Length: 334
Image 1: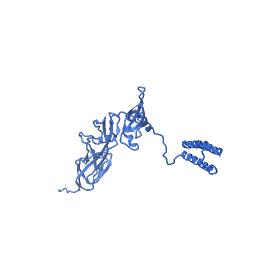
Image 2 (image 1 turned 90 degrees about the vertical axis):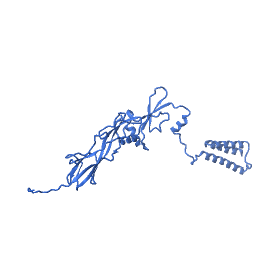
Image 3 (image 1 turned 30 degrees about the horizontal axis):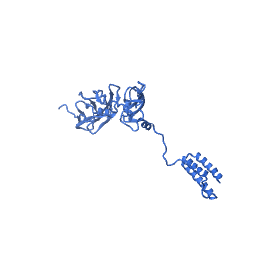
Image 4 (image 1 turned 120 degrees about the vertical axis):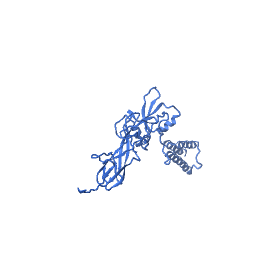
């Protein structure tokens, strides 16, 4: 009986070693020690043999269950790079210096509009609008260099919209306006307001006679198409604006209008903005609504499209008399 028990126990030990469970190995060694000392179940005739085998089966089942992975346990994932950096940041100093620069100049990759221009900051101001999620913050390059040896070269290691995600060790860059702030500054400029010049001259026209209209700009201190503003200081940037017309809408004073047109109009016979009245009007209120757009440049750099409009309000009114002509015959006798 002891020989048979030892043989079975050796089999249990082999099974336990093959199954990766420390508890199963420990339990098998304890069981082996008990049988070698002659400690067997009290009934070693028939039932003892059955109890011995049942005891072996219990240990093997326990070892097998412990070796199987738990399907309900969450999967083990490797630590992310950022997590590793956080865990090690307190134990050793960062071996790198950092800095931020606007994503413009010769290191800019490509303009958002597909241009090859690499001399301005249009990419830096517009790129984050096309990111996910979109942002109105300017795009910065993240630079890195080794602290030792001294004068190690700087290298671009990434970019960021705004400065919130920049390395904590990077000194804050000079504050710059966003594109939205530049656009708002453009809309607040002191613009001139156009009036309407009408032909026939004298602000009098006739029913069924083509009338010509032209938007004209006054000779005042306001800004108008073709002019450049004085520099406007926006945070650390000096910004200039170049003004251009976007559209005109002529209102003829009889409830009709030209709709938005790009042409400022002109006089007879070449003007393209013209209208024919169908009935007399004592005082037609003629106006032109103007929308302006333009470009801007930073610190004397390259001109960049502003991508917004200034919709002028309360333009002056030109009063037009629309009269009806009547043919009359007179005798030579008076």
